[in-house]
Image (cartoon, rainbow, N blue to C red; front, side):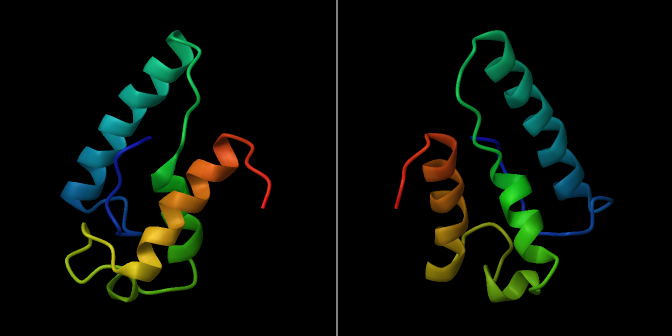
Amino acid sequence: MTPYFIEPNRADPMRAKMDEYGAVVREWARRYEAILVDTQSAFDSVLAELHPMMLAGDRIHPILTGHMIPASAFLKAVDYKW
C-alpha cells in the first residue's frame, strides 16, 4: 500500500514527499511482483469531489468515511468481490 496524504495539491510539501515514497513502494511492488494498493490514487479520485477536511481533519488520520477509501482500494487490488 502506498503512503498517502489527503491533499489534492501535489505541490504541498508533505504531499510531494508522500508521492516520492509512493514511487518507491510502486517500484518495490514491481520488483517483487507484489500486489500494489495505490491508496494515494484512491484518495485523489475522491478528492476531485470532496474537500480533504471531509475525510480527515489533519489530512493524515481519516475519519470513518475516509477509512473506506483505502479499505475499498485494498479489496479491489486483491480482487475481492462484494
